[in-house]
Structures are given as C-alpha cells and as structure tokens.
Amino acid sequence: MVGFTDVPSQKLEDLVTFPVLIPVKVVSHKSISHAEFVKEIVQVTQGLIADFVEDQIEHRASSSGNYHALTLMITFENVEQVHALDAALRAHHMVRMVL
Image 1: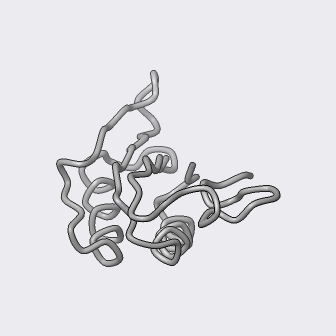
Image 2 (image 1 turned 180 degrees about the horizontal axis):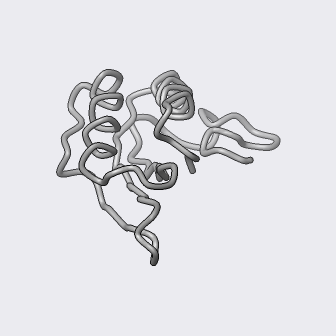
Image 3 (image 1 turned 90 degrees about the vertical axis):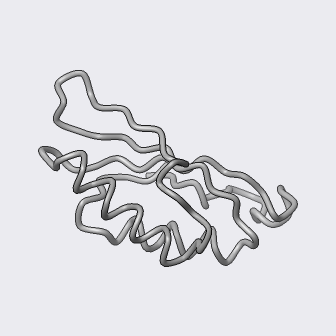
C-alpha cells in the first residue's frame, strides 16, 4: 500500500518547501469508537507535532458506520516530522491505513 511519504522517484523534500501544510488521512479498523479513535490519534500526533490541536481534524464515517476516517491538517516543519508521524500512525493498533 502506498503511503503519503512514498514518492516513486523524488524525495519529498525535493517536492515541497518546508514548512508545508499536508492533509493526512487516517482510517480506523472496524468497530472502533469515534471518540476513542480521535483521542488516540490526537495524542500520537501531538507527541510529534507540538502545536497540533483537535480542531484541525475533519471526520467521516463509512456509510455503514464501521470505519472512521480522520483528515488531519498538519503544518510540518521538516521532512523528519512527516516520516516520524507516518511511522507512528502506521504502527498504532487502531489504524487500518494512512494516506
């Protein structure tokens, strides 16, 4: 699966100028509560992006309500933050995928 840090032939730092606002979509596993998912994702994100606040999240539930997709609007200061957040979100037990 391709993630938001996967760029085929160029490095991310060659494509954008930091700081840069990048939307990051995070999708939950099935049957995880919205409130708990948001709480966990905010905690992980704030651990790496100090000025991130919950107001910077857009939420969508699947049509059946089994999955939740959060779009995080994050201003990254450097490429290391992008890679660190991507790795932390992918490793989280509630996260099905990161785009």
